[in-house]
Length: 179
Image 1 (cartoon, rainbow, N blue to C red):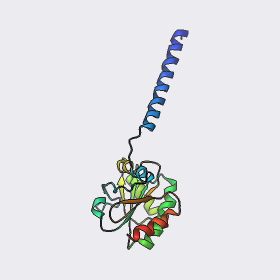
Image 2 (cartoon, rainbow, N blue to C red):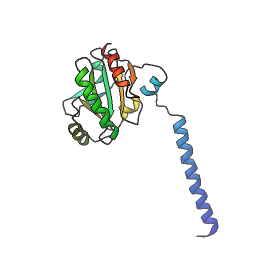
Image 3 (cartoon, one colour):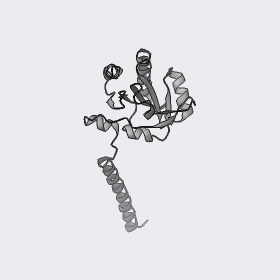
Image 4 (cartoon, rainbow, N blue to C red):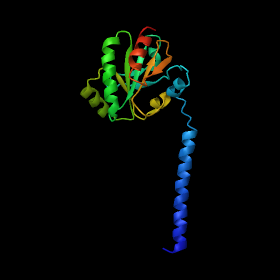
């Protein structure tokens, strides 16, 4: 390849890389994801975004809006490929045994395959119901990756918190169980 042609190809490749980098920086800076996580971080307590998703066990759907006013709930976003999700889901399973009469627990399997998710639930002994958010659209409304993401929703439908540190689980469970 002649020197001018090689320099032109290198300049073009460099321009493409710089263009992609600029696009990435723009996307990060202008992230229009006004999810629940971001609202909580700003000190707000938004109403839980509604969803109506198929249950993993095939027994219909769960419509989040229809649960408002009935019981407070814990919402667990997880996936079979997520290693930290194992620990958190097992903690929630133990909490469900203690608070299950006062608090509903719902898993949201996200960005995953249904068959893998069902196998994962059986393997890890998770008995609370889960729905399937295969494309991650529901997860995006709540704050997106990374997972696990665990939210605590009062009976009124307002999101009161997100699990950030281990101590948040008992604190938020007590708070919503009393609401």
